[in-house]
Image (cartoon, helix red, strand yellow):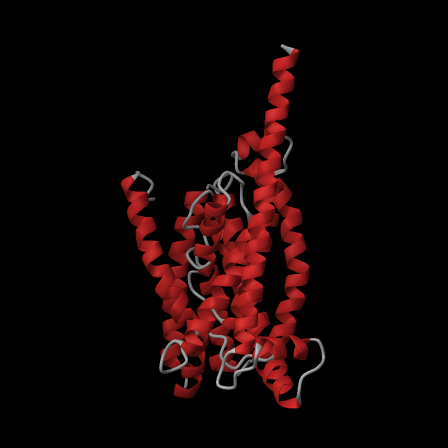
Length: 347
């Protein structure tokens, strides 16, 4: 019996070691892909800069022309795209894992619509921009999340109920956004519409620094709150039996996920489907490895970076990045809905 127990312990240890090794390998490969996409974004454009010149410029060298193009024009846009993608990817992974629903991403349950409505209101009617606009968008996301949580509460929060309430509130907020656009001046409506599509066009260090500061705070808090996520995945009763403070843990995770989606939306608008796609891709790369939060964040960063590169260079005109991500995400959403209905999980 002791030998059997020792053998079982060794087998479990081997499985865990193999899982950690695969998670490390996947994360390193994704990080390398993200860095490659960053190098490509900094190198390719109307003014092509060789990669060695890009590296030299980032290290403090390079000629004045290269420094201006890379440091002032391309780097803030590229870094903002990576941070936006990471924020959406991490937010989507938390929501989908916590609520145990592949549709539970911030763009599907109304969080980004709340940020969008507040942002359009602030921009079109009060002329807000920069940091004030970001604050308004984040406030809209938080207020929407509070409303969804309160309306979904019935002696606890069930994942499917929160998703349904969020979809309903999101539909109402999308109507509000349409009304705000039709009621505002044409020029302001055009600016707001471009932001609503999800765009990195024209971004500068002014938009990047607040997003970076927010991420420096939110990412560690999210991983700290995620320590209760494995227990919460087992259900409320089981989690309580394991000594987890269910509501406090759930609120902390939802708060971090909402804040991540809010700051990303504030920086670049509601870039569609990134939060929905990132976590499933990461979990495919790491089956049976739980939430895969870090790979999901890296996947989101890679999706936005590659989509923005395609939006800039693969067409006759420069498109908003949200157009490209929507072209990728919409078919996935249709496939997901069809698959869910076939297996009896359509709700």
